[in-house]
Length: 111
Image (cartoon, rainbow, N blue to C red; front, side, top):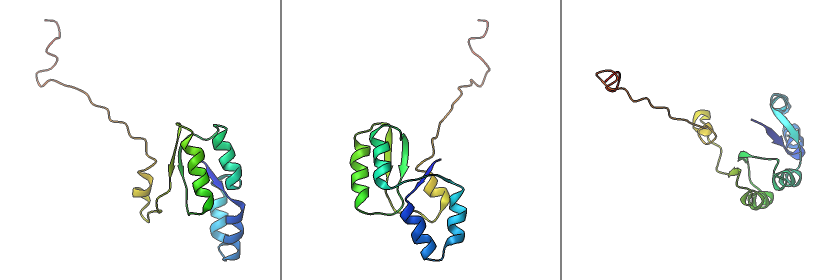
């Protein structure tokens, strides 16, 4: 997982007195970049997988247009769920593995 944080968000968290939350978040942040810079990376093909947007604003529509051009990226813009397990279901890559077994062993073995 990579976190791209708009520098304006950090300033708003500091102003709101959430400096402790910002310090915890800083360990997960991969880049501090504006939405315009992130959209440029999307258009350049540097961003793949699922992109989770937290919050809304006028830049989300521009980001959605940029991601619509790329087939290797999906935009998730729904409201953030309070239950972490349910929130992470949208980014989980699940694989089902099945194994066929006959109740009498291997019917083709040696016959």
